[in-house]
Length: 311
Image 1: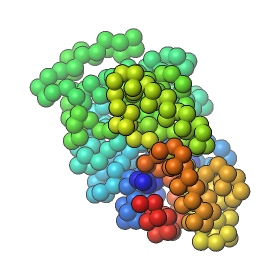
Image 2: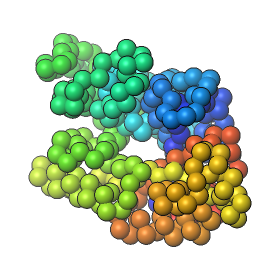
Image 3: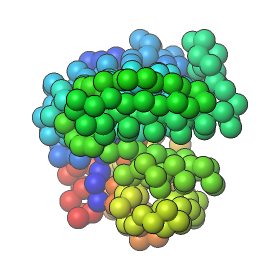
Image 4: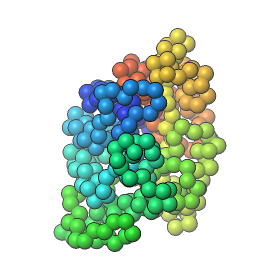
């Protein structure tokens, strides 16, 4: 089981906060450090000192870390032109020595788009654009050096793009797709994804969605086993009940609710729940959503008491 740390810096974090957590993630032996791609806070938090850009952050962390994988869960297709995004991600992959993983989603947070004046098309158009972005980005990365890339779609057009720089990983960084769409999401995952992620849901819902992706893969002649199954869950672990309660309060949640909807309680409780989730869904990768970025002891506890029991 790969254990990855997943942060939500739009809730209130600057680069120094993220750097400390990323370095602690690496030192503790976790597999990867991931972050969201949002520019607006959610819920009742202040969001101070303000948002940080996902790919600027990961570029800096590429030079401050040496082992962990780095990525987004997930980059919004509405924020950046795909050809420019392909350049950014390829550059960060080079800066990291080939440690980037590329999560891409269609975009969803309406208030964020309104606040920053970013267009959020209707769902059908959004997925049309998402599909074109996946084709463009992976196509640019896969184009042989010395060649050029052309694309003529409904929403994007590229003519004679030099398709540079090339990422270290060939044909490109692993693509992560996720979500709960019943048709187009599984179809796009079957075509492009190295990993499929479902976040913050129960085992029944997760299993259903993984099976949709598997069916879509088989329909195009792809082995479903090539697509890693992963989930994201909020983490809140304590050595005793008082520590669980303290950590839950720090993120504005209740221990009972976190036990029901996330991974909370003692290390033994959390190991048991992860084991049951893995047995039911077939996941081999788990993103632990860490919401209190000042609590590095939390990471150390998970690394010492939970990770060794998961194999």
